[in-house]
Length: 290
Image (cartoon, rainbow, N blue to C red; front, side, top):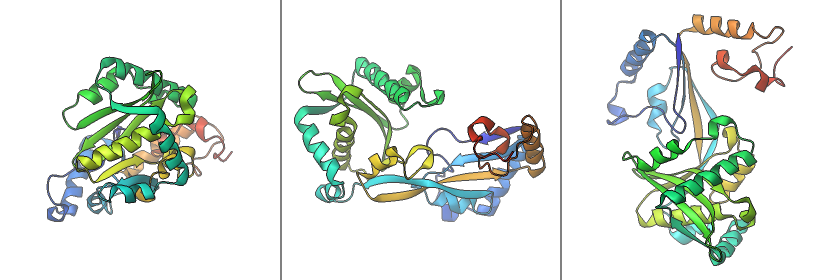
């Protein structure tokens, strides 16, 4: 048996046709037949917050749950209106940063290497899991892709010309996606990432994009520091949703029972992880009924 999950990032159904032209029941019938043929027990996918048709095509097939919100900037608004939606502290940081720093596009291999160093430093600082420590090849492939327009933006301290921050953005159709970033802890008070995001905002307006999606908080939280950081730029939010579908209820239950049998005295009743048979029991120690 197998299960299916979406790739890291925003995924879900893609179609080259208008969703209203698609027979949802026939689509679902074919999709389920594919899952059964491949012995897939359950399916988990993040959905794209800017593609509403995904929910219409999946309605009734499993469940769709909300996992917090994402923050986006409406780039069709006049630039001064966009800036008026910034919180006061953010405006202060940007005004200070523009006097001391310069944001440019990173075009050299040394820019990428420095960015990776800063990004990994950030991940260590926030005690991120190993899965977030992407290797150099990962970043190189992002910036070499022809499927979208990738851009590495870096921030330099004017006095020393030292690179103090960087961020990767991905542009496709009418959306600019803020992907990954890192900064030098010695220049934390200058908030170089905020300045980089603002420069990308201005650049994206000139290029005719509609949305700059900043994403959400850690684990879908609307309360953590990451979400507060992003919501300082905008009060425009979209719901971030997850699709969970159990293809084979009987096998799903059997796998779950087998998984929890390895931890005597525990119950899956209070654990929301999906699929349950892949839950890391140690991470949910405070939620488990003993």
